[in-house]
Length: 252
Image 1 (spheres, rainbow, N blue to C red):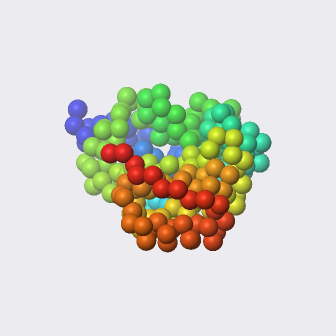
Image 2 (cartoon, one colour):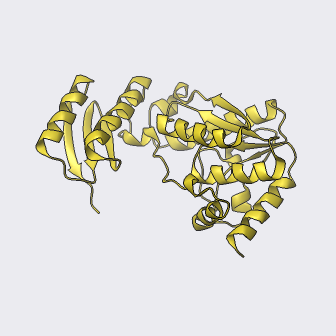
């Protein structure tokens, strides 16, 4: 089956669904899903984005960028994940609890907006941030990519086939992944880490990350930084509240 034929089968499946809403993150999978939904139903589609504390500005920009392409009905759904104690405590069940909150928040919004079916971009058994299997809401929820047996390479091939290869992007790591297990999560800390990584990228490029543990920051970079670059980063992060800053070169 060619990539165009695969895309046509996706459009056909979505066309058979009435009053569709798409759980849209701005990532590669949900961008393809939104493209197919628009092909199937024109502008009579809702694009619903969960807006939570762990969303980065980069993710929100991706959402805006794709929606500007389509001019569909869209809504940002506030989900207050940090109000859930098990999420804020950042324990072993944080990710699963957060996923359930996001899934139910988007599903409830879809139902309230009059949608009959909520589509998510899950593939295979891999869980997504919005996963219909985790939302206990009275609305039909489907995962078209998983139902059709598509894998990551199929997604990229289809986007290229329909001229949307610029939607193929590396996934953005959740902000919560930058914190040590058990580190209590607050808006202040999340904001610090996002700003810290922006500062680090000025010197290290895109392939970098900051790991937070009790205001001690471990900086990981793909390039070995010069001493003067490390000094500049350390000074800025300490000005913003960091206690100590260490640097580690990522292994290739």
